[in-house]
Image (cartoon, rainbow, N blue to C red; front, side, top):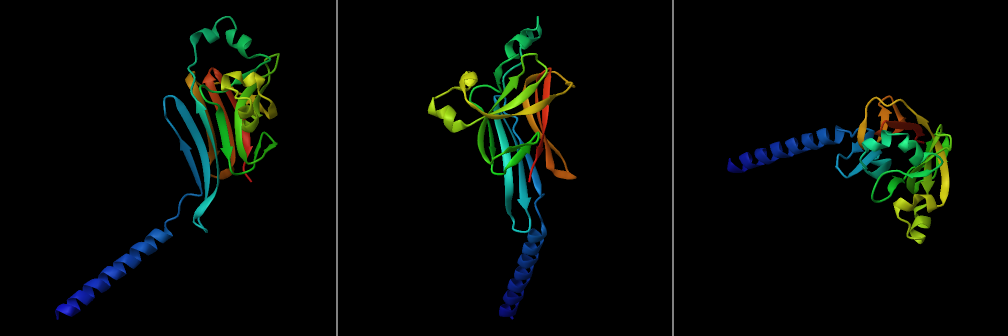
Length: 205
């Protein structure tokens, strides 16, 4: 009798375990994951894809950046224009702003190979056009360039960015990767700092 009770208990436990495993197996991760960091000094924005069929990652890309403060004096007497017009401008603070991607991307129609890239901004001499600048980290490392010396770094390529009307004043730099759930392969890269706001479309293969 005691043996039968033990057997029934073990059988019930086995059935419960099997049901639990089946439920867990049926639970799927969302096919796209967006991650952001709220660190006061450094920010991260990331988009990752998940293959539920193989239950494994299907690619990701992320931007890591320092968060400089916007200063009120930038708005005085066109000072910000003087700082940025005709210049390759440092994007972020402290260490380089880094795009790390294991997927080839298209940003504003330009093909971006998978890998790691240092990022900056370039503004035209007339102030009308902004471009996102890509720098090969290996070449920057070879000469021990600091991010504050970005104007000395060789530019691998650049892509145009669209200037937008800012909806709010940003006290610190914010870089976002934004997407719609119905268009998971279409992402918007948005940069906002002070009253400056720029964007570029990102297509994921």
